[in-house]
Length: 201
Image (cartoon, rainbow, N blue to C red; front, side, top):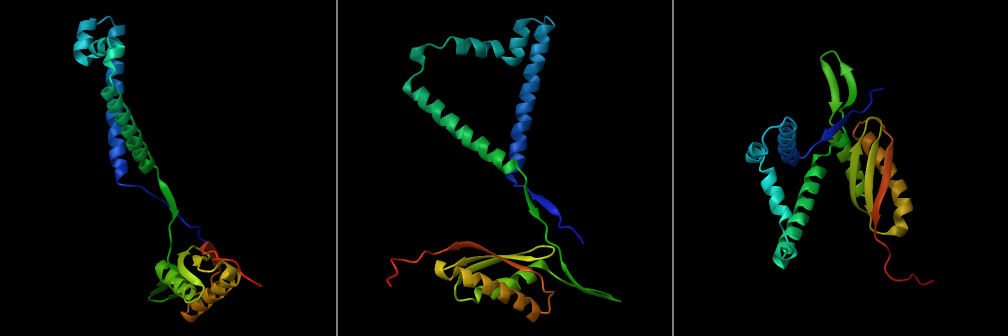
């Protein structure tokens, strides 16, 4: 039995995140080199001319409470919040999103080739069968290696139990009607509408 392959989907914004990471890495390497130069007794004036580390330190050390005005606090706060959300978003987009790679369904082999069905065709057949049920608002199918998973939304919670059983049967009937192998059809309830008001008896 063939096992289903796993692929990783990455966002195009991941390139921008890697570029920022590369720039940060260069900055760390540069200032690490400055530390090495200071350890080798290179003139601090020369190192400061190359990196400006001392000028930046003197500027920050010379700040007094009156220098931190309301406008400075506002700019620093907004800048920090913007950087947090921007870098966090880029970090999130840099993560790989694995998903199961679908494969074709092999129907049979002959001398001159093989009969195969695209995964979307299998999914479409089960989706249409599920949507034909009067209690189903929407359906989305996913063909795996050995089964078909169909997610449905029911417009009435009271009909959910019977609807799920009937959708499974309709899905298998649709596969048989189209000459496809009778794969297991797994029905997943992803949403429903609660009945309005109280039911009087």
